[in-house]
Length: 216
Image (cartoon, rainbow, N blue to C red; front, side, top):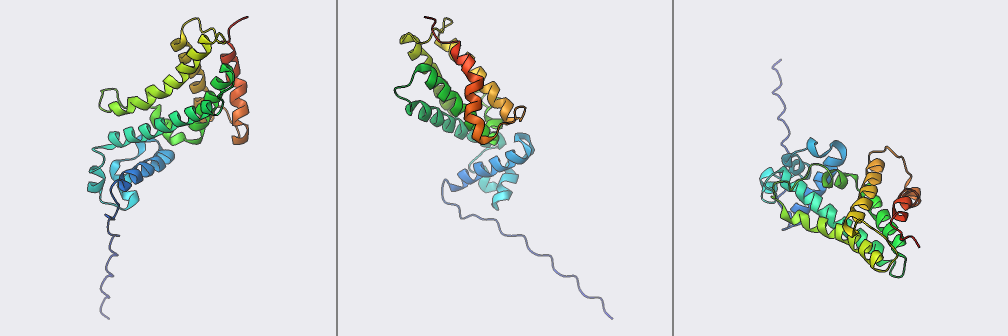
């Protein structure tokens, strides 16, 4: 009996090229976040992000020159979202005390980091703009810190906060406490259930905020 001819191998699915302008860029950022969530920022390539979307890698390179450019876009997206969360937190408490407003920023900061660990790993990993390649990335970072510093300065001006080292150093001190707590939660050094996140943040950050209160 004659041997049967081998079955032809199935053809690979054709690459998708029907993304509208801007959609592929957003989709690549989303794909990067999924890959970072499962393996970390070092564990994927731009080609892999494109492959996950079913597009030719050449299409991806039309939006991002390299992996670092894609990571910078991920970080920038994250910092703008963090800035929005901080502004929303203080905007919801127009008549509150400076201490309450600072704690609200702390809750917003830690919650954002805890709920978006992939963003967090890129935003606060190796500094992407070390060589000045991504100046746009510095804009939301500076504005987010300014929200915190402005709240401290307003509290000092009102006589509610002391901040003897100056608003900037006081804001850096508070940011350090917020970020340290966020890091401990994201890396699961401290296990916190979602429903207890806000109360845990208040308990652990309140001593730092109280240290800024002006003595009467």
